[in-house]
Length: 277
Ligand SMILES: [Zn+2]
Image 1 (cartoon, protein in one colour):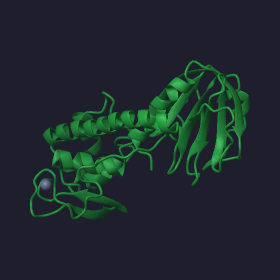
Image 2 (cartoon, helix red, strand yellow; image 1 turned 180 degrees about the vertical axis):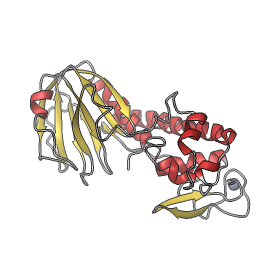
Image 3 (cartoon, protein in one colour; image 1 turned 90 degrees about the vertical axis):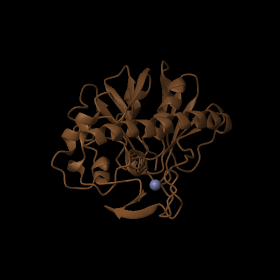
Image 4 (tube, rainbow, N blue to C red; image 1 turned 45 degrees about the horizontal axis):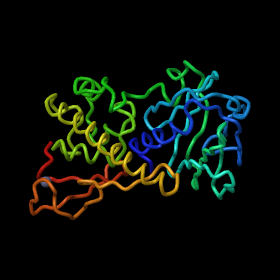
């Protein structure tokens, strides 16, 4: 599943192919993904000029000179291909294709169709159901230890579960929650409301660091991908703790290997020597 760093990488890859250009043609090859495509998607987008792109949580927001913002979520298996070959023949699972004024095709492909493409009217993000209850962006300046402490106050759920709650912080995801807690030396089972400000200080820094490193890695893999196939969306990471059950801890190298537990149906990987409640 694409996590925040992949989504950020996809957005950065799309920018040079779309920003400043008009969308010439919208080819809708089915009526929907997880939700129906907007009925007015052709009339709004054809002729619209792309002004800029932003990301909120795992949503890519494409701002145009029209009154609607195009929102893309990659779901479980969505990918975007930038195709400059004018003779490209649509493939299976290519669900929507935007042809830019310079004939570059932006292809949304999604075998499982859990992705979403919809409009939000300019200025209505604050009241839109997908966005209104979202917590702060983990990489933003308004995400810091005092903010996190306020959002965790009184919570008896585990810190791991709390970090996956989009009202606490958005877009962190299972992998990066595991990695950040490991690097911060905080047990994933610690009660969320019980962690000191000093330790949350470390945790917020580690959250930002793991995400930034992944985005940097995505940037380099993006260059490789663009040379190879034009496909955006997936790359290999190396993780310190995630998916390393039974292996030696890279920090303490103690005899106790990395453990896996299940919290709210999601695997958590941690080192019981390094990570304390
Ligand atoms: Zn360890």
